Amino acid sequence: MAKKKRKKKVKKKQDELSVPEISAMIREEGLSWEPAETPISVLSPSEQKKYLGLIVTESEMKKMAAAVKKETADEMSAPDFAVRFAAPTAKDWRNVGGKNYVTPVKDQGPCGSCVAFGTCATIESNMRIKSQDPNLNVDLSEAFCLFCGGGSCSGWGLTSGLDYAKSTGVTDEACFPYQATNMPCSNRCSDWQSRLVKILSFTSHSSMQARKNAIATIGPVVAGMAVYSDFSSYKSGIYVKTSGSTLRGYHCICVVGYDDSQQCWIIKNSWGTGWGEQGYCRIKYGQVDLKIDSSWAFYTCDPEVKPVTGCGFAEHILVDKYFGGIVRLWAYAGGEWRYKNISDADLAGIAQELFAADKVYVCWEKNQITMVRAWKTP
Image 1 (cartoon, rainbow, N blue to C red):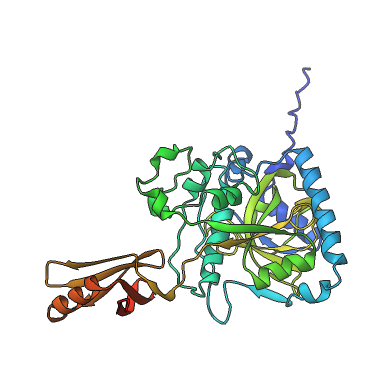
Image 2: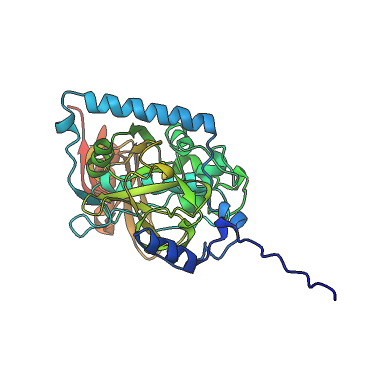
């Protein structure tokens, strides 16, 4: 009698754990987050890796970890450490006195562009904070940052976007709309040089108190983290890596806040609002495997922001008359063109006075002229 061949059971890879399997591990390990099927978790492991993009070698990681260790020691040995880094117990830039300084969550798609997204998100928020305007309309071009800055869908270094934003700058999204595929830098708009936003500097922060203080007193930061296979299924709660998950790769994100009572960082991801807590995630402090606050520093930036209000001498003056009868006085002052609507009756007198003046002094609020005076040298 012929023996029946037994079918071999194919063992499921750890990096393909289902949501029920992740839920079981969370219960067994006493963790407090909830997994779910997300737009990322339904993808194959190879497709999920395309949603990462932070490139770092083993030797670089060792150097970065050593630099963080040294910087932490330097920060903590400062005689005024307790005063300089006296951070509050919580900060969330999405809600500061009811105002949201964080720009909307975006979706990088299957392109390793996370560094550009984490960088632009950080600069955008810091522009709103520095200008003291939570409604500041700023949307920077991740495509310009990545594809003109030397990166690609294959990935980029953690501070590469900050380096490029400092040396060259980043245009607005409308100048170079993003697509989740390698794009030539020549796709940028023709007037891209006049549309650049630059950062004056960026600074690293390594000790836990220095990281919190930087977020609380300056703004959201650029950060890196290791991503494990269960992270794609994150829905809500305080994320802690499960023991059965495997390393997927490395990722750049923007940290928009923290909460000591929950012992967590609040991160803004670039996987769309269908993942996590409307695109955000709370990550428990001190997870060595994730490297976010143990091996890599946080980076604040100081964006160049034109003053919302101000006064100064105009470099150029002109008057336009539009169809429909609108007459507009234009002045180039404070680094950009600003205007004031005037009447037909005022046109002759104002134009004669201003164009006869040696200088024209103007005050403004945003792009509107609030005061104009002719200045004639005695």
